[in-house]
Amino acid sequence: MEREPGTVRRIQPFSSAYRRIRTMQKFIIASAIVLLSSASASAAPDYPWCQRTTVTGGTPDCSFTSFNQCQASISGVGGDCVRNPWMAYGAYQDESTPKPRRVR
Image 1 (cartoon, rainbow, N blue to C red):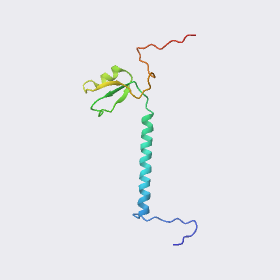
Image 2: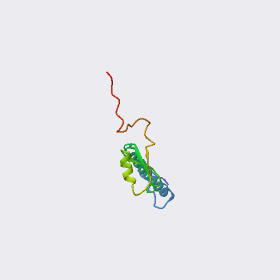
Image 3: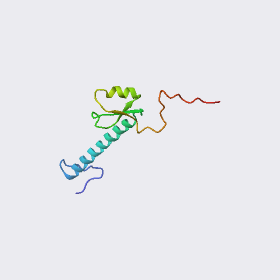
Image 4: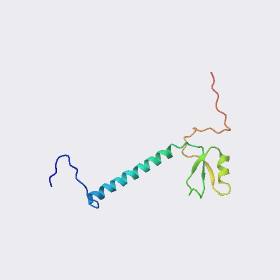
């Protein structure tokens, strides 16, 4: 089948080429959604306290700035509050721990 230069070959719906293109389009869209959702999750700030409950399926919810805030959240639901395991060691200081003073 000869074509004129500059003409576009039309792909018929339900042909194998059409199905491959549609599959690739779906894959690209799904990949973009996953990448965008993971980028927004990683942009969330790190908080020092996490709750683990059966409500969260055992997955830690690290959105608490204090132990008391975490305890208030799990009251009545059950679970426990733990330090955020993903925070770098020593990157966070408790409100009760005074910051070291600089000496000149």
